[in-house]
Image 1 (cartoon, helix red, strand yellow):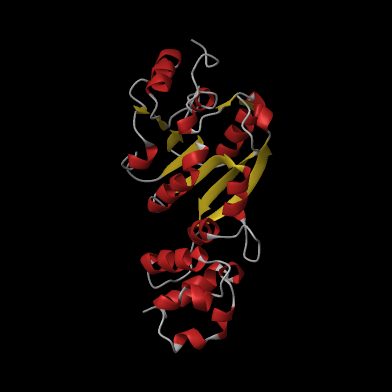
Image 2 (image 1 turned 90 degrees about the horizontal axis):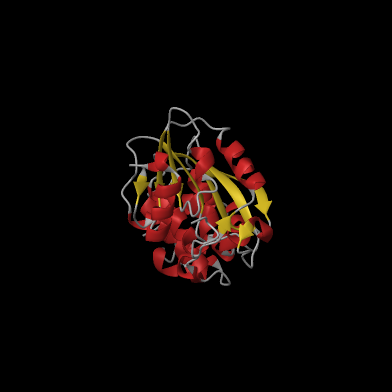
Length: 254
């Protein structure tokens, strides 16, 4: 059975990458970084996996939830023996002790949750190269003042620097999705902006953007004492605040 015969599961957001040129570009971006341990998420028909298996001297694992894909990969890539985590990525334990790199053509319907999982592992993820729906990639990379700047932009960029590497057209996949894609790279920031705690930071950012049309004062009123809310910063809307602004405000929260 070749990957043309593999059935796509819409529920899993599957589209197979078939453009060798794009696979090589992703592979080249990966190889600009040093790593000893590598996890591939959602390998599908193995378009990228076949390149990753050739990297000498690393610990390599893949995570794939779909039985049919697992069977296909085991049959076509015997070297994957013992390296397949046959589970939902969102449910798995940390795949390696210590630092590791994550790569994947991420299923579009859970790509945001995948990023939150990466954030949970941020102490250990030394690099992530991922293919996302273009508009999600743009949101992750957006800076303040941009209309797509939001929760994802702030939470990811607080801990990682984001590089928007390149875009991928619909024709690179089989079947072609209805949207363009883009590949981004995340690398941990050497210093994270001081905040009261991550818990406060996450709460503030999510609450602020939950009602992004409102001024910050109205959106996050419940998190601050009335006297603090007089500060002119609260006249702004969430999308006008830099990551540093959110972090500084956490110290003043109730």
